[in-house]
Image 1 (cartoon, helix red, strand yellow):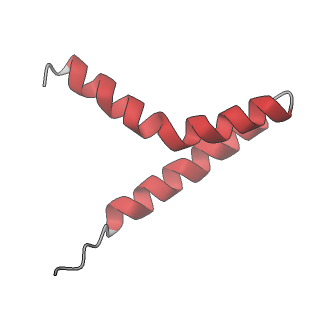
Image 2: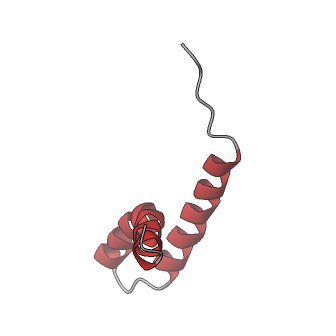
Length: 58
C-alpha cells in the first residue's frame, strides 16, 4: 500500500482557504454571512476549476 502525499498542492489549497476565509469574514455584516463565508472559502476552488474546465471545453 502506497502512502499518498499532497505535498505543495495541499499547502497552496490551505493558503487559499485561509485567504478566502479572511476576505469573507472581513466583509460579513453578521454571523450568518460569516458562516456562509467559511463555506464559500471551502468550496470556491472547486467552483473555479469547474468553470475553468467549462470555459476550456474539457
